[in-house]
Each structure stands twice: as C-alpha cells, then as structure tokens.
Image: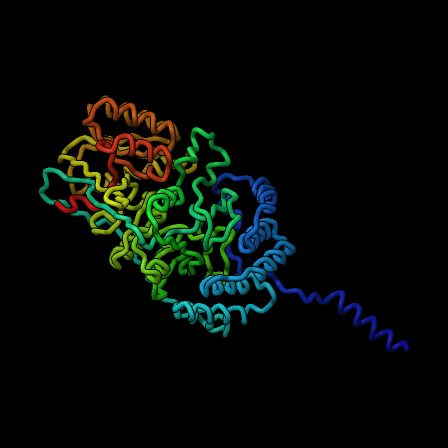
Length: 501
C-alpha cells in the first residue's frame, strides 16, 4: 500500500511539473515594438485600440493576425492560442492561401506539428508552381542546411548627358488599360496595421483610401474623398477601369550578413528589404533568418508574384535602394512600375526603366496615363530644389527627394541649383520665396499637405511660365489637387531624361 501511494505521489508530481504545452513563435527574431517606437506611437494606446476594434472583425484570417499582434506586444500565450484557433478555422480559397496558412501554423508552432505543417505548405507551393519555395520548406522539415542563393549587388545611377544644351524631364508614360493585371503591396492598400486597419484578409477585400493619418489629421487635411497612398491611387484606377488586382501576400525573405532580402521568381534573394518592413508584427518567422511577410510593402517584395502572375503594372513604394533594384529587374521583364513614393527612384537615372515616380495622371482614349508631362530645362538654368535636414522631425526625409534627384542630374548636366533646406513640416514657403527672389521659373519640391499646396498654388498662379516638378507627392490628396489644377505647369521627376527625343 505504501508503495502504491508512493507511485501515485510521483505521478501527481510529474503531472504538476511536466507541461505538455509547446512554445509558440520560437523563431521570432525582431522586436514587435520596433515600428511603433520609430513612429512615436504609444504601445499601450495601440494595444487597447486594437482590442476595441477586434469585435468588428469578421474575417477569421484577420482575427488571427490581430490576435497575433496582441500576443507579440503582450508576450501572452493565451493570445497566441486564440490566434492559432482563428487561423485553424480559416478556409483558404486557393492553394497559395493554403500554403501561407500552413507556413503560419509552422512558424507559430500552433499544434506542435511544425514539421508536418512545413510539408503541407510545401505541397501547396508545388501546386502553385513555386518549386524553389517548396524545396526550402522540405529542407526545413528535414532539418537540413539551407542552400539559399543571394545576389547582394546594388543599383547606382548611370546617367550620362553629353554636350546637351537642354534636357526634357517627364516624357515617360506608364499606361494602364482595361483588363490589365496590377500587382500591388498589401500594406496601405488592403490593410494598414499601423493605423489599426487589420480587419480584413490580406488576400482580398475593400481597397482602403485613408490610413494611419486618419488617427490624427483633421477632416480638411485628410481629404478622404481623394485618398492616400497606393490604396487611394488604386481606387482611382479601379473606379475608372476594370482591371485585375492581385495583392502580393506572404513574401519570403531571408537574412544574410544582417540584411534581409526578398526573392526573384527563381528564388534568388536579391532585393534588400529594410528592417522596419520585416519587423511588421504580422510577419511569420520560419527560422530566425527566414520569414514570411504577410503585409508586403515595397517594390522589392513584389517581384516573384508579379512575374508569376504576368503582371502588366506593379504599384508599390520605392523609398529604398532595394526597391529600385526591383524596378529595374521588373522593367527587364517587360513589367512597368509606378512609384508614387519615389525617395530613392533617382538611383534608376540612366537605366532606361519602364517606370514613373510621383507622376500626374489623366484618363484619355479609354486609358489611364501616368506621366507624359514634359518640362524642358536649359543648361545652367536656375532650379530651386527642396532639401531636408534629417534628424529633427520624423518623416521629414521625404522632402529630400528633389535634392537627391537633381544633385545627381547636375553631375552630368550643368545646372545652377539653389538648394533650400527644411527641417520640419510647413516650411515650403522658403522654397517659393527663394524662387521669387531669384526670378526662377522652375521649382523641384514636394506637396504633402494643405500648407505645401497653398504655397505651390500661389506661386504657380503668378506666371504661366512657372513650372513645378513634383516628388513624393501624388500619394497625397493635395499633391493630386495641385497636379489636376495646373496640368500644363506641373511635372514629375522622370528618371528617363530625354526619353523619345
């Protein structure tokens, strides 16, 4: 009897000590607060607001993602369990959705069956025709070393203008027609995790027109009727043309030498991805150095999907060198790129790419034409150029886009650049005051908000000869307004100088 009691006691202790649960999200290798901290958003406020919005979520994938974000921000196993439950209740519509779903199970170790989940994901990627990705997952399941291929080369400007008396900027056009296939990023189109808009699937849904700005901007500044970012402009396209829109979901990224890279259609990881985009709290980590970015952001994350889906046009952010390398790669495949946010597009100068930056657009002959707004500049001409003093104010660096472009152009085509530096918002009056003082007819600047718009409008109204070359502007309502109100005076920073001349 004493022996039996002893055995029972041991069993009780074993049950109390042994925990059959497994660890969730073991491969997570980023700080889920990284982007919130960089944007100056209070984590507690964000966390509570996401909980408040959760009840309005009907899509099970979206519920899973919202719960995953909560789990990571709070390091809470219950939220992880609820996230896994939501994902397990989701019914994928395509093999690609199923593949990313099983990668989600594997990355979070939802049921402790990561090995089988990886093999299931590989099965579905094989069905989709992405054999290289299936091979990676099979190797992970077998715990074999990964033989990933990288191309870490960088793109640099290659502009050469020889003995020219003048140049023409703005002839490049990207045309969107009926039935075109458009591939876009997910972030700022279907979802906006930073702006608490995670309440629909990344694969399909309503195109969003306002984003995190809606949390702080006045109605007059927000101009929801016009819309923001890639979502706002895709809405413009779909409001006029019947096109096929494919969001690029679940891009696989891999780390080498402490940098992350996205792949081409053959699985060569060649397009650098900035850390903040990998650090989105919806990203799944298969290993510490291999991740699935559900909410894709940037031209660099769209290449594989664009080539596989035979895209005509790709619409995404171009605010990083890796994104511009992707622009050139896509152009060589015959796929056009529209980069409304064009901070680093100047790197494509001289590369003859099928791409436009922050280009005005108009509907004509049953097509939407982005670009085709030529402005001629003479050698030695004065150009007033906006430059940003980066460091004092978050996101002021986008005002540096005109300077990056024209400082490169002036290396091979002599110009008299008058550089005006801003270190905060609502300072572009300095730019137009300098134009008036110099009696200059050409300004290169950004129109981000109503203040910028008012300053630009006043100057453009002073003379028909005044020309404004826009950078990093068409993403925003007041950039759209200035381009529409002055169609003969507003152009864009075309990287194909003297195209068709």
